[in-house]
Length: 274
Image 1: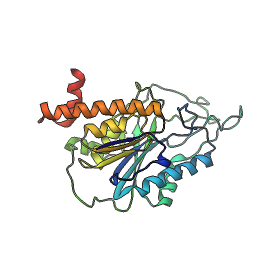
Image 2: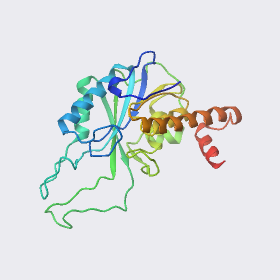
Image 3: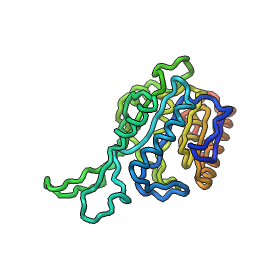
Image 4: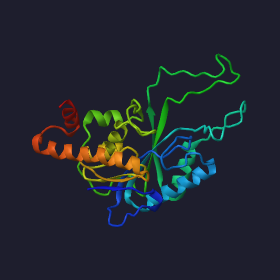
């Protein structure tokens, strides 16, 4: 099942859809990114209220043992708030505030995964070799992991994760290069949802991305034999995502017929080689 909704998560109609087993999403960060149909220049208090609204919506539609993975920065320094030249930057502890919001709604905190982007070639020091005003770079982001009422799954299913993947991904630092080819202004690499889906869900579980963007989570879900619900209010991004996910569904269907014994991870590489 693939269900794509071209609407706002706050207005999305979930009637007739199965409970969500896993959410993998990356919401807007409120750092003045020029999205099609989203105001990314809210005050911080407005931003947190908005976050509370959509996270509450997720909670209502998740399975009792559902899991939530949110990719966000550790902190944000919005340009539209830091407008006074020469003033001290105002930094907001967004990871801490997301955690408070999720727990206030009813989610239980599980772990924080550190996404190491491996951006070793970028430099920015502030006051060079001085305690006056050093600057801290952000070559990493967080993947906050929560669950609804119970962490251990109520029913067992079929896992699709290999032994080496499990050994590597159960460590809380994930080294992954950022996405650089997407037309979407804030896309994450497909490796991120691929890891979350394999580690935290079973085959044929229902995966949700409520900020679908260019369809990265949807492609990963389709290729890994999961059901997927994607929500995106921008018609432009929605159309891009639909085309991408439709292609993944078609390739996956064909591969099951002509390459039934090849591990699912290798099939995408074979298609791209063709």
